Image (cartoon, rainbow, N blue to C red):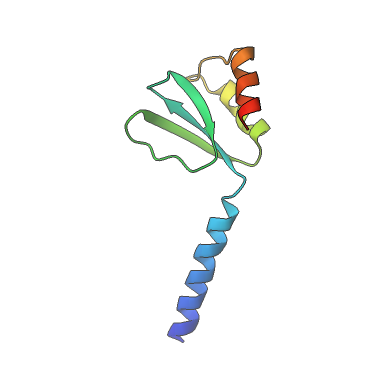
Length: 86
């Protein structure tokens, strides 16, 4: 019985880790004064002062970033650079 519980817990842990692939978060960064879109769950310490998400697509994360009051508006040139980096 203990083997089945352990196997179930291991399967659950691996399943949730695989679900995190392809997700996006919006994070506020004090060092840059911007809100960035990242692909890993942010740790809120140091220069990272908030995290919002997860979002299923980068477009959803961009839309959310535009509605967060603490995030400065993104210049069109910066958005092009961001899109070409990915």
